[in-house]
Image (cartoon, rainbow over all chains, first blue to last red; front, side):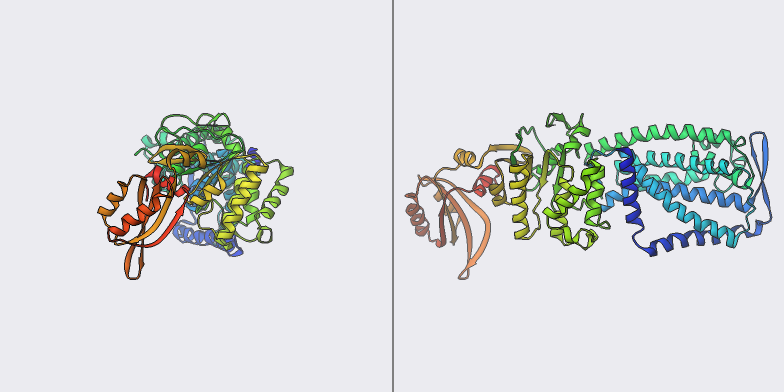
Length: 271
Length: 305
């Protein structure tokens, strides 16, 4: 039943989001504009590289690429949170009760929404990649394609798991979007999206290491820009696996708790 | 605020039970608790033997709900896509999905518009699709919360007939209906419960309830120049059981007219009542003598006018 719900939810979400060819065009155009913005922002530093240390190894990475990967994963992260906001959109559409009335596994519903957004993201990724090729000459160094794929896939799963935890807020309260928006900026800062973690105050580092985005950024940057192999990124990938499982378990508990609390407080139908 | 207070009732298999009450009486709250969308703060409720809180998942498999005037559908999906989606959520056997969706669309007269987006549907069509959604999992217990709200007369009539004849009589399902329409409850329900301020004040068949509280006849009349004094004095006539002044306000020949319902022991009391009103300077515009109706019961049990 889990798989059936995931597929049904993904198909529904895609059908609702991509309701016309114009939507597809704008979904592609948006990251192109975003790429242009980043190009001009980092144009003065285009020739520079950044020294990125991880473990015992030091990697020299293209600065613009470093930032663009940060932007890439952060966009992905935001999208997962938004798709993750599947229940928030159900609330606005007036369909939250009809979904929660059914015996469908809530995590399957969320996962279906996340899957649809991943496909949506893939479409945007094409836009971003095009913008890199057209506007910015990023020095891409990929030696291990499998390691890059694993880094992207595990980052996706871990971020989805975090999104599912935050989803509990959307079920619990109509102010879920506000709570998540408040959490978004600190997560962006702490994960090292635009700057290396080495420039961040040391006392904040423990918080950074609680976020899967931090490890996802390390793994993708190293495999995409630094030519790192699977053994170079084994540690961040392992951490991502553990975090994915941990956050998924936490999400199940939180979502179930939030649903029960919302039913007790009669907040499910509040817009 | 206490929405429901110690209500206690049972619905046997194959019965259509009506829950009536004024706005805010707790009807929708009761329905939502029974289909697991709300948790009661105390007490317990069982649906087919399953506890709605502790065994919510089991309850969700065997119930469904149709609410009037609410969305509960995806407007950017077609009617058919909506039903297929909900069939997946309810884990309807794969081999049955297609047939069940088509059958429901056919039954509700939506087959020819099944591939149109729901946002292009009329209100009546959306409500009929809601009923399809409510039946997609072939529920053992169906909750109908004012299902005909805002529907055309003919569509509402067809829907009532469908629920009564197909869902209850043929398929033997239990149905709990809440409605504001007295004739709807009288036409459809096997038994009725009156809910007032969160309390279940009476339960029984229409006939049982009529016998319990209203005897004899009701004189329904439109009267002009009615005063509080006349109203009080009417209650003192020996054969008069009860006098209710409704909210109705009309006009006849330039005079304000009010609607009275006077319950009397027998038809011999009618001349006494008419004579009494005439001698108090009131003008009777229209008179109708009838047996007690569900509306009389509603007003009696809920104190509503």
